[in-house]
Length: 162
Image 1 (cartoon, rainbow, N blue to C red):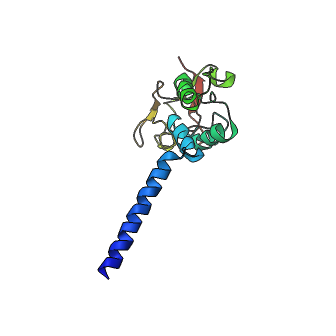
Image 2: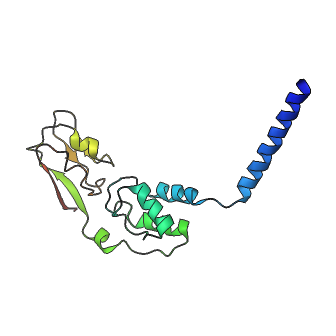
Image 3: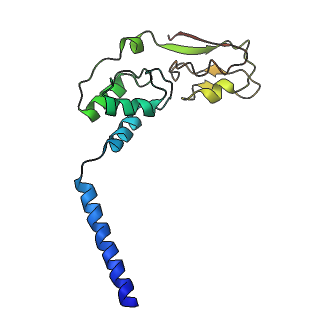
């Protein structure tokens, strides 16, 4: 019985080694490239690119050849990284994306400290404690508007950054 177990173990080890060698020699699949592109995106899930989140945008870039310059939160840095990874030409942010950058502003006199906006912010640009006034860290805000809808007292507006 021991020789049978040893034979099966050696066969399994040899097949595993062969599969590992073959996997390294085959080119990375489309799914690996999608993962790479997704990692380069800022993960704000803001949908400013026209896709419902960063992963669908990454899939469109790889599978459909979507433009790499549609991500305002990622900015020029992300465009450069995507161009380098995909072997594409660096292009400026799309016109809609490069318009005056907007940021969320909380009317602190109306804020009730409910945390809804803070919980909705994908980049943690809103600070404040429960039942206390909240404020936006302008340098961190991407202007994605995801904090506006959950606000029960409608105290958040978008204004040009500056």
